[in-house]
Length: 182
Image (cartoon, rainbow, N blue to C red; front, side):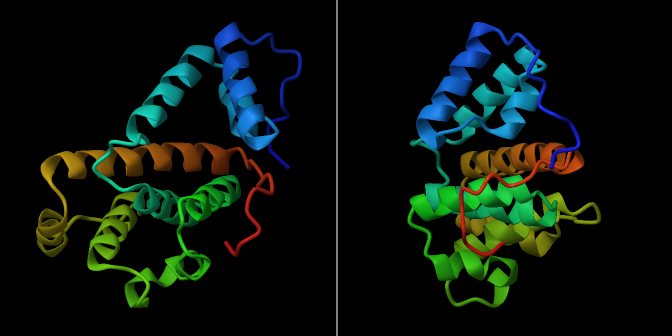
C-alpha cells in the first residue's frame, strides 16, 4: 500500500481530471502516481507533457527499446508500480516475454542486440549513484546512436529515474497491469 493515501478530498483542475479520464479509457482505472502528482497540478501537467514529448512515434529510439529502458531503470530503483506498468507496455510493443524476463541479465542474453545492450548499459550507468560513463561506453554509444538519439536516450532515462524514484519513495504499489516476472 502507498505511503500516502489518495487524497479524495482534493478538487483537481479540469486538465488533471481530463488526464484521469484518458487513463480510465486506456487502463480502466486511474494510475495511483497520477493521483499523487495531481496534488501539484502544474507540475503534473508539465511532467505529463515531458513524458509525451519523449515517448512519441517519431522518436529516434524505437518503442520496444524505450520500454526496455524504462523497465530496467524501474527494476534498479525498486519501483513495483513502474516495473508493472512498463512491462505491460513492453509486451504491447511486441517485446517477447523471454526477452523481458532476461532483462536483469541482458548483457549475457542472446535475446539482445548490441545496440540494446549499449543503451541498457548506459541506462544502468546513469541510474546507479556510483555509475560513470567511461570512454568505452561513450564510444559504443556513438557507434549505435546519433547525437539526437543520445539526447533522447538521456532524457528518457532521466524521466524514468524521476518517476520510479518518486513512486518508490512513496511506496506506490503495482496495479496489476502485467503478470510477467519482475
